[in-house]
Length: 482
Image 1 (cartoon, rainbow, N blue to C red):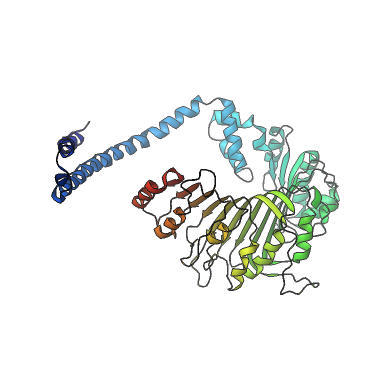
Image 2: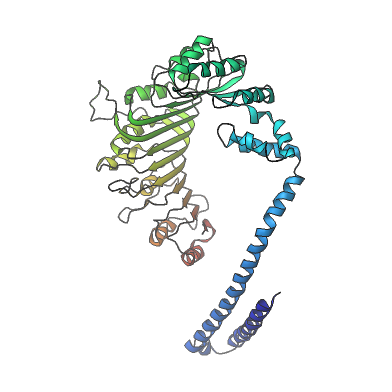
């Protein structure tokens, strides 16, 4: 214990002794003395002095702890890595590899130390990704290290390069085409080369990421195909929809399919478990000649059960486009919905027409981001929380909105009886008045019905003192971190 800390303790202990004796004396005095204003003010002043002294000690101890941690962390980390069994280290390498694309992680981790290299060379999954960007010698090395695992191929090819390069790449991996598991297709020259070389019978291929404007490869023999990522376009004539369990569709600038055809394709996916749709800078949808363009015809709601629905709408996509998309998605019945809304171009009153079209689920995760451009906002005039609270299907709501409001002062909060959990993270526009209204929704008597937990995580507009006071009222059903 240093001299400064001893001095602080020396200053604080007499105050604590005085406060303890004062508390005892007050307990035996008359009520009028207990309630005397000078006595209360004196106790309050003494308590503040004691707290200030303790805060000084806490601050200095905090600095010392941080210095020790900075010294200890690298030493502990180095010692811990040395003690790790090779099997655990290999598992860490595998997890790191799965969180990245291409093969940079594998190459880097194999050059850290002799031990890291030996462990990485004995971990075949690190060497199962192939790209046209790999040098020839590395392709051969990767094949030998990958054992008999499934292979993941990315066929990115610049049209400035000779076609012979992609032919050589495919030829080298062609004898292992029975191990191809994932294939990324970037242009039609690659597709034509594969067909010319006869690589159309891919029995183990499970997933395709497609950057082309048609699906001419759909005639290949792909009995194991279950996952598809579709960029730029959506081919409703794709014959393999019924066998897909995972489908991701991305639209840029325009949706090149009518909503009637889009809905028909969704209804044909009998094995679908996860569906993702992304709209970026979309301002139009292909019109349906059989329908009045001003009308939106929705399918039978919640007729196709899936496990997860992911929605991303961003960068000046118009709300007038979102509504028909939501109508088409209403045929899905997900267990969980993840929705990201970022910098949408809202066009009132279209925005208020979304209320009954939101594709919801028992568990809803929504991230809302709004930039600083003029007249652009992520539903800036459309706080979503009051709308979500009204839907009986929703049991748990998780919202992250750093720059967008989630409640408007004029919107009433009328939760359905099914809502149990509400989590607000980084909702910096949330005010203490807003939180007070939400806390009033917590059922303080019934342990089964009504809102059971309210989580407030790192919301800058809410002070610690307010949270402490609110916690005293609602109890453990309010959970918060700053």
